Amino acid sequence: MRIAFIAAFGLLLSTAAVAQAPAGAQNEQVVRRYYEAMNRHDAKAAAAEFAADAKNFGRPVGRQGIEDRLVDIFTTFPDWHMEILDIVVSGDDVIVRARVTGTHRGVAKMALNGMPVGAAATGKSFEVSHIHWQTLQGGQIVEHYANRDDLGMLRQLGLLSVVAAQ
Image (tube, rainbow, N blue to C red; front, side, top):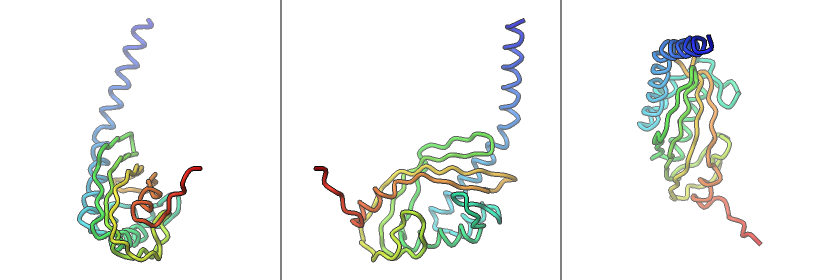
């Protein structure tokens, strides 16, 4: 009886995984298109992967808000690039670990957490790690969160002094 239950439970899990696979694969493709558009610096195409009422860090910003933020990033870092190192799909969630690089050649205008708002371009480059979590519904990103090494970026750009340990 116990073996039959375990076998039936395993079959149920396998069936559920197969049923979710197409949606998961589609969600992964949406996120990959988003990163490809970002790496082309096509803010409009990248934002098009978001729902009209998308949230960023839990705040409603909509598709236009995403586009505006991306334009500011690309203006501040004209060579901004995000290399996907790992991608994990779990149901409606797609999690990406990325290597992010760029050179500070413009002045950021939008307060985006660790962005160097108002700082004169340093001409210095950075390389940091990011983890981005996108939730999708109906083939569009409806919510985005990220864990970024903004302090590392600011240090590499020379905008944050390192306090010596005593």
